[in-house]
Length: 482
Image (cartoon, rainbow, N blue to C red):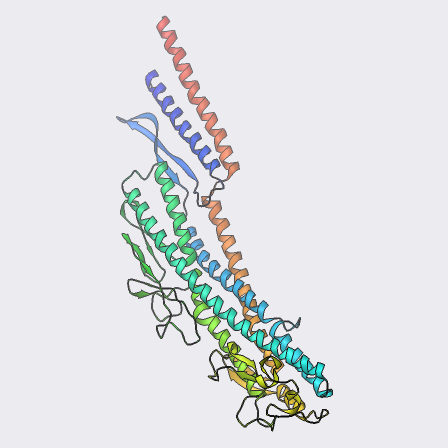
């Protein structure tokens, strides 16, 4: 090897070590940057005319593991779905109440039964009659609040679907733009690596709403497709379509066209639909499940409970003073029956002083025109027997034989079971996601200790190459002196 060749080789070595030192600095600076993938300088031997001529850079490499990233994205969708369902059912269960602690609707039923029992023992007591009316109003308020909560949660879910539609459409357009930029540049450069990282971050955003996969195409571009085979981006971004709704009555569904589904180019992505493209998880999966399945079922169960309570206390055998077929203590304010009954249940005006009635009719009968014997507890005992009667029921997921209070407990138990079920799924999915994210991070993330070790080796290589040039310079000077 000639002196000039040695100098050129050492010079190329200095250039490469400089690039490597710069890359280490970049990695360390971005160690905590979300979505950043560790980079390295790709080096190979430089050969000219069959002879070694130092080293050269072949570009910037990214430590990407596509298999791990794809699997982690799928779990990101599952985690987003589990988190929304768990938090929503935690809210619902809290509002319904816990039978173990005696709160919510179950407590209201228990308080009503207790107040009615006290009045039956002291039918002349105006204070006990007022306590019965107060506890009856508490039940009505619980039904109204729970019914309104279900409507509010459906409204919120629908609104969030609309927001998700906008986020996903914007993300798809961003990927289309990044694809265009990458296709027109050298994809071995640091600038290209930064664009690829950004594109992956955008894909991560989409995966929170629905599962997606990246399909590599020519010139560094990708297409975006769902696991079911629906292309969201194929060269150009496709539009995800959804129309938000303004009302959510019990008779409004996707099937009858009253509520909007999710679609792309006419292919339905609506979770739970019969379409091959139906989304299976992600925020869209959770939000549609809540809007179209869980919350309508919850409302229907609430209506069943309200209908049973009205029916029990409207039995003609309880109160001989009322017109046969007329309602008893509780009424349907519009008389239209299910669905939506829980939102309309009300106190019979005949016994409510606020509506022109009188509480003594609890004792003497809904149709009584004047007060009867103050010690007569016949009707009160009939009412108490009606709500304590164990009756079979099989409607809207409530099955078994219950008294009124037991049915309220069963309703609360069903909500609690849904909460526990979704919390269990969340816990399992979180553990899997954390494990896979850690594995991905170990493959693609920045290890500060490792980078510092590389920096020591780079420093040694730089010093060695510099020493070669220094000695070669000394040799040239000696030759010049000869």
